[in-house]
Length: 258
Ligand code: B12
Image 1 (tube, rainbow, N blue to C red):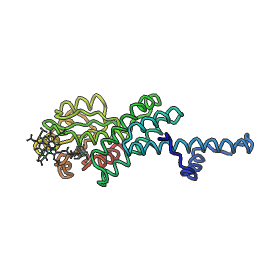
Image 2: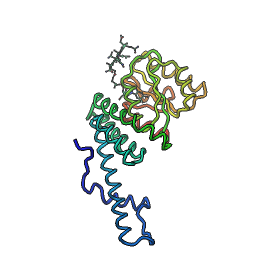
Image 3: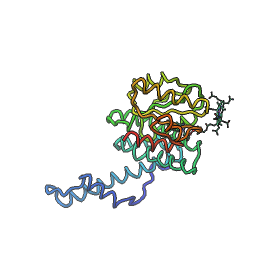
Image 4: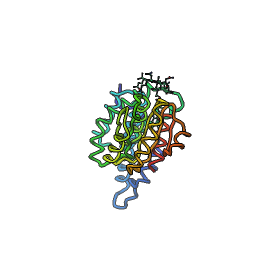
């Protein structure tokens, strides 16, 4: 399979506009016409290639093609593409599509898990470069299934989608007592906390955890979810938000950190 799919004249017009807006193409009086012209062609080719590569990366994530995702990520970094562009225009763009399709019932849990696995592998290569480049996550998120509850499939999906959206996620696992949420929330300085519950008998654990967090002075926003949870319940216990599925959880998290 060819490494890159280069589509001729992919968004060429918007590309020129983007380069002009980025001030990368300027009318430089010190350059003669020929030099300016060749500089323009060089820049266009360079950016166009980058865009095509990252589009192919997003497609690999959508298909859950782990090997191709890793290969393109490595090649893009070797070619000098900025780690942040690889993240935003490749990995996150791909996970955004999967999230939207999941929300619309066009794909289901297995497809999301496969896409997330591809993203995780590519992230393994990208992460050190992001750290080197000083790229900050869009927010720090702590998540766990509340005390007494062992269900984690939905919680894991939420965690993966949030990672895919650019959040730094700490996953405390299942059966998490309020004290553990407090301890990690303080240690990691998170802006957001996600509580998951799948049992009507463990749902009160959300209220208990929320109260304990507030009593301990943790001001991070708290969002809740899980099959039996509703917006009404979130309002009743004073949570900052509720989402029905992993894709909506990403939208909610983004809205809570801005
Ligand atoms: C798989 C499963 C199990 C597995 C869990 C494996 C695992 N690793 O998670 C096992 C077999 C261990 C299990 C055990 C039990 N289960 Co069970 N289980 C299920 C089942 C079939 C699927 C749950 C699931 O994974 N759904 C798929 C995921 C993707 O959906 P989700 O969890 O809802 O998550 C999505 C959203 O809710 C949301 N979301 C989830 N978390 C969060 C968090 C935040 C912050 C946000 C914003 C959003 C969000 O986003 C997710 C992704 O889109 C459900 C039935 C069902 N259809 O829901 C019963 C179910 C939840 N289980 C049930 C029961 C009763 C039990 C047991 C008590 C059975 C028993 N007698 O032992 C035990 C309890 C064990 C315990 N202490 O927790 C009942 C609960 C009934 C009730 N009213 O409380 C259910 C509804 C089955 C039923 N119809 O009776 N279970």
